[in-house]
Length: 270
Image 1 (cartoon, rainbow, N blue to C red):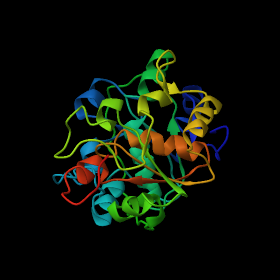
Image 2: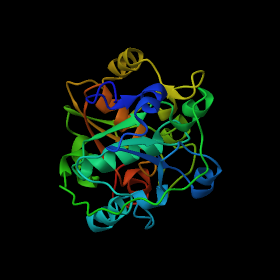
Image 3: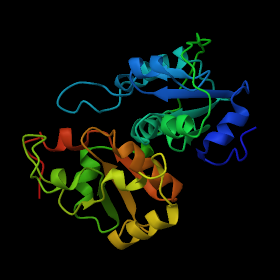
Image 4: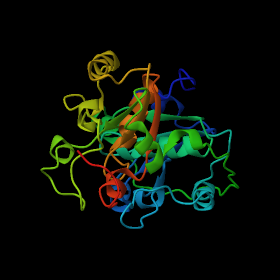
């Protein structure tokens, strides 16, 4: 049994203890070749491209609810199944999956701390076998309150009670790296790179949460304000969204991200 069903972050040893439970659905978010080369036994695959709309310029926008219902039905999701999300890169795609589940109204989930990297390096079994999921009829309960759109971000600029957390690299934030027609950041946005959420010396597990909280507090990102997080395509900000949830922040994600903002002729840029 998962030690604490209320916890949305679990360790590899906890997952190992409940891997064979019928109500647990372990989902890898990675490329097919990576999955085929080795994965957590019994897990099913969602490729990252299935979680995004894929239409330029804002390729990271949410697919239609109907497409997502079809996707999650194809892996056998029901309201009673407890999803364990993992990836192979420190939590960006797994966090994006968690955000997607929040949008769909499915809060029965957890993220595997350190993902496949921690699972493998801590000596837990790896499988190359594929399983055929039992298809379900998943129905979403759409939750708009975890999504921020361009209008929400525009409104945040003059709103002292809302902070934009830019999870990109400093070179993207300051505009020295070209990633769109316009480069820089949303006026007033605060930059803290997603990589600072991970402990590179501990299998890319999430750093000590109190250390992260103190770092965010210094930047003004606290539970006293509303937070909107983004990156280039809402992939890296999947992790910052998830960490925000762990810390109890009032957080939403801007799925249009910089690929929308930086390519729109009307948006202000610093």
